[in-house]
Length: 324
Image 1 (cartoon, rainbow, N blue to C red):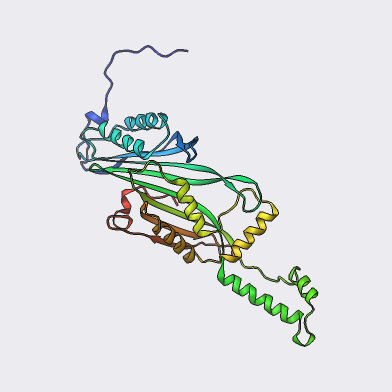
Image 2: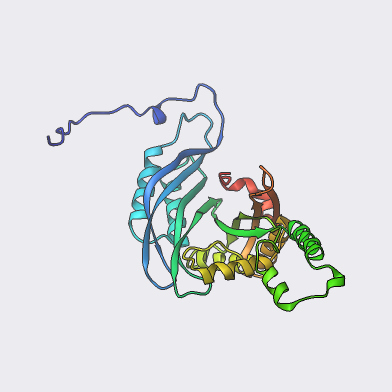
């Protein structure tokens, strides 16, 4: 069946014609988690596409108006994300389109784009590579002509508890004293065999998969969203990012890294803090290190912020909160 023939008629527009029964200005009105494909340009020039969820909002500053034009927000999102790779400049143009389409109804616009950023990562030792997925959200705010740009992302890593490691070492020492009494002297080959046996390693520290969640404010005049640079900086600071392709030599190297980087959640948060403070392109940040404990049924969590004037401490409500 074809389309129905168009008939010239006037359709009711309740949002435009009706007045609010209870007047009042609204901070944000819009659409949440619109399904669209997203294109991004990689640092090597390749264009990648990913499914995305877009939240699009404007304020409603006229208290007597019943509602905004939500279909206009959707059409702007669909058109903007279909025209080419997303950039900070195209994100600003999208926000400007939101406001232009709402005339005197709105003075602020907000957009948040959530997607999984896929990166090919090398193994620690072997020549293999594998895919890693990083949850990302890019947000833009246009308020009074001022454009703010924020990137949120998550990085998974392994954390080995320093306290548990110390307790495990104590048990190994006690086992050693029991198996090798001081009066008997030491046999080098026997000790070497003991160290390589399950009998010798009687305790191991607990490790767990952990998550670093970041919200970073960037210079809106930049050309890209610095996703790879941010991920590399955080993983480099934590030193034990989870792996994709793993052979035995890679697993052994990962065990060595964990043993050399014992950390509480406080240690992880401070490492992230130092790494982001050292990046001149990061204007402000909020970071959360969560260790999903294997010892407890709850997480151990530490949060840090840069908290510059007018930043996350003073204006954290400007952006849509991260989903927990």
